[in-house]
Length: 117
Length: 108
Image (cartoon, rainbow over all chains, first blue to last red; front, side, top):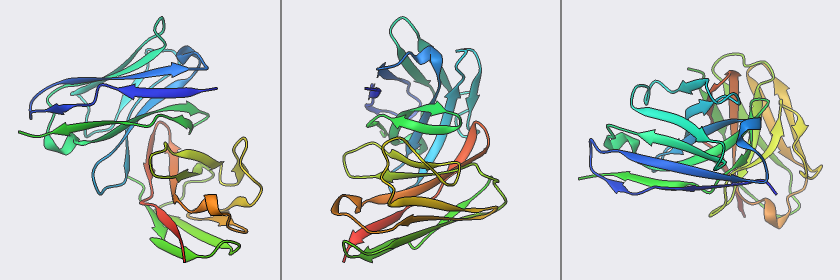
């Protein structure tokens, strides 16, 4: 069974950093593009970043470009999101999602990131 | 950025009723539209992709239709487990995409 499990969410001060992880089971990350999607309190879902199946092509929403970095460790079958220079606007539940032909066919439960002083 | 507007925000229906959910795009998105279901405490579940294709394991009571800027998710006869939030998603310029705000289908 294909499953994704995020971790790493925490309370962090503005300007701080955090690394989120997404452990995949039931498939190899190297066979799919992968995404991070977030939902801020009371807001809709927002695409954050995509890592192509090659593991080298990366894409970011303008709101996080230059601050967030998506990557993976194929040996651990884990996707990461390194988040730097966090602001209150980054407070959200972050989901990882597998990308198959442009649709998110599997999502994780999400991990909560709270940016507050 | 393409904006997806879903209506209504809330749909109050009884089991057995037909549910019709709308998703309107601010510009044409061809066939790059998907629908997801979300229940409390669970991750989103893919229902429909490419406007009208049911994902694996999705019952036939779920159907999608539309083209251009206007799209519809229909649940032909609501089952108790169908009461949830539904949202649409477009990805006409992969990998960038946007989501609708969601329609909550609640028990009347």
